Image 1 (cartoon, rainbow, N blue to C red):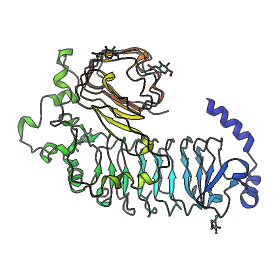
Image 2 (spheres, rainbow, N blue to C red; image 1 turned 60 degrees about the horizontal axis):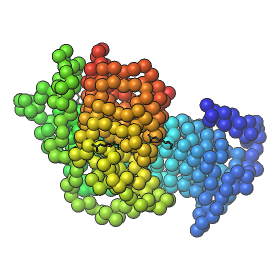
Image 3 (tube, protein in one colour; image 1 turned 45 degrees about the vertical axis):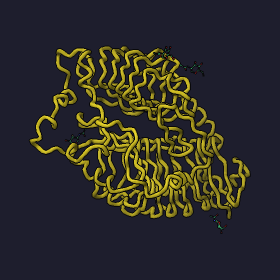
Length: 497
Ligand SMILES: *[C@@H]1O[C@H](CO)[C@@H](O)[C@H](O)[C@H]1NC(C)=O
Ligand SMILES: *[C@@H]1O[C@H](CO)[C@@H](O)[C@H](O)[C@H]1NC(C)=O
Ligand SMILES: *[C@@H]1O[C@H](CO)[C@@H](O)[C@H](O)[C@H]1NC(C)=O
Ligand SMILES: *[C@@H]1O[C@H](CO)[C@@H](O)[C@H](O)[C@H]1NC(C)=O
């Protein structure tokens, strides 16, 4: 509502008749540094700082000519980019369009940006990358479109971006990649974490990314069947950094890391007998048996990985650790690294200085979240899977407000104190599956305004009180299968608004 009000006032200030717009564009567009934004030159590079200025378009202005520049337009209201939006900005090499509520990139929006190397479109509302979304960006090396709602990429979308090296698409809704999407690009870094990918085929996808130096595939619902063998084989041949790839389905492999499985696990031979079809498979597919009691929960929970996914044994990376840290993704970051504090029982990693810490405390026999000391600095993802947590105390997460992912799956949680999650306003994914939660009420999820995915499967939920999910304005997927609800509820989804 507030942004709607702001938007209106901006429109009244800047709207001009079409004739006026045209004349300004061609002859006398105002120099943006003199009128609206603060600009500073450093080492022959002009930074044009137009963040949070209420822009709905920038066509009425122009960048200082003859100056190589970076244009910062984060936090404006550029929700639709029309054709030729940036023709007056021909010497911009880096364009920042994050947090604009951007929904639509019209054909030719980036016309004239022949020298653009970096394009940042993170935290917007894009749903599709079209064939012509990026036409004209022949110099583009780095494309960042994380935290959008992208569920589809048209097949030719990157085929003219022959210089593209870094592609960041994590935290979108991609179900698959179209064939030959990378045929004409030579990617070195690809981030696909947090999508809805179940498989990546060799033909048409993996075969074209042989030169990759870093690929991130975590937090996708991998379907570990025979069809995943090409991906597993490909991972065995590459010697570069890869995040954990954990099976979501079928049930007998739920939670297992594919690098710790053998091909036979993925693709059992037909008459291999019991090993192939343990009785628990039927629970996953269907409704609970009528005599189901809370005490029977344990055996139906996801089987633990045969080896805990702690340290992974991978061949020595082709590039050294240091080189990896300063690889292309790092080079493009501008802030200096944050000092890293990591709870002593956990392992912490950081993809880059801006992205915060990924804290892995899986299967550490923890009884209480308050045992985590020292408190991590700028935590982004916290994995507490497979511990002995029983109660989530109100104070447990007070210092974790920067979290985007919290994994509390496969613990013994029966009590979550009121307000325990209230300050997790940035949280997008919450895993509470495989616990002993009996009922859900409104106060439980209070404050989780950014939450998109909520996993509550494999609990003993009998009651869901009215308005339980009211605070979850951004919820997209909710998993409630395998609980004790009186009518059989399997998985359903809520369309984003
Ligand atoms: C970009 O800069 C070059 C050299 O400084 C200059 O010749 C050219 O006209 C500029 N182009 C635009 C569109 O400003
Ligand atoms: C996983 O793949 C198998 C075999 O291709 C298919 O039958 C099954 O439906 C898939 N499961 C999911 C959850 O997509
Ligand atoms: C767990 O933490 C809570 C709050 O920090 C504390 O009150 C409680 O005594 C702790 N329980 C154990 C078993 O350490
Ligand atoms: C949440 O933040 C507010 C304001 O910073 C603070 O007063 C409150 O105690 C916090 N709640 C929790 C559960 O940490």
